Structure formats: structure tokens, C-alpha cells
Length: 228
Image (tube, rainbow, N blue to C red; front, side):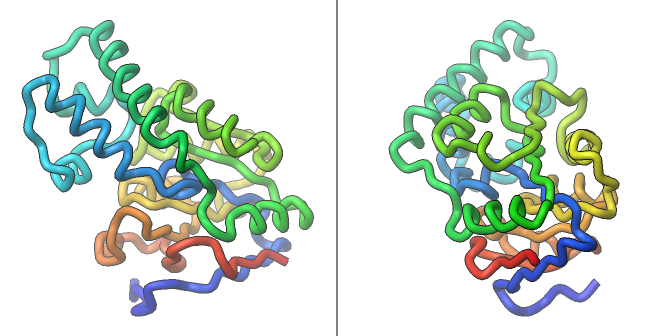
């Protein structure tokens, strides 16, 4: 695959071939990943681990339960993991609440998609507390036909389960979907699901996606994105 040299790609989607748009949430609908990273850094510091933000960015991804098992196998009981992740997510919500907003141009793209009959879904590794926070703050129910969160899947990204469940719920085939993602593990999941993907460069650099052949282009936000 040849990655475009441009740092941003204009998106023009054809509603006759694209039947659904599926969005990751954190870092894609909202630019919040550094807030998550800081909340994780604070929690890990309380547990005695001095990790840099770059270390957290590289190592902390996926469902919260999977994160703890991957990083600290057998160290914490299931009850402790629930308590710790709840503490982290509540801290994140408190920090981010005053600043939450959709990425520029996204609201218009969602409105245009609904006007042209394109179905809309979310497939996120975020837990329900974070999904409910974003849904309520941004009135996501006015736009999206389905939201798949961490509690609804048995395996998080890079497994494709979340994207496939979203497509099934929307009544479309994977090849009729276009995904928007910000993270390599998410793009890996969308590739495994057989879905084309645009990368939103809120968190990672373009070079980090060079191994994926389903990437259609790179955007900073959704300004100028069209569907017709």
C-alpha cells in the first residue's frame, strides 16, 4: 500500500456504495485521548507506577479489563479491577466535562448521512460510563442508529467483534461500511472486519498506520467531508 503524502484527505463518499459509517468514539468523535492518558497516569501513579504519557499511549489500549490483565496479569482481583477502572473513568469524566465537543465538521457529516439514508453506528472499547457521558453531552441518540460499547463484546480491539456487531445491528455487510478510527489497534480491527477506514490524526502519527492496506486516507477533523 502507498500511503498518501498529504496530511489530510478530502472525503467524498457515495451513498450508493457506502451504506453505513461506523465511528470509534474516543479520539474520533471527540479529541479526548490525552485526557484519558492523564487519568491513567494519575491512577497508575497511585498504584506505584511512574509511567510517562508516551508509555501509556503505547501500552494502554482496549477494554479496561483487558488492559489490567495484559499489563498486570493476576495482580488484581476482578473486584479490584472494577473499582480501579471506575475510579479512573470518573476522574476522566470530571476533567473532560467542561471541554467536550464533537470534532469540527462531524455534526454536518452525520446530518448529511442521515439525509441520504446512510446508517450510522459507533463501535468503541469504552465502558458504559464513558459512552453514557458522551452520548448525553452530545445527544448522540439524535444521530446514531446503534452504539456498541465494551460491555457488549467478549473481545476488544484489535479483534473485529465490535465492528462486525455494529454492522450486523445496522443491517449492512462489512464491505458496505466505512470506518473512522484514530488508533492502530482500531484500524487493525476494522481491517480484520473487512471494512475500509479513514484515520483521524488526533492521537497517532500517519507513519504508525503504514502496515494497513484498508486505510483510505488521513484527516485532522471532518471539515469538508461530503456524502452524496
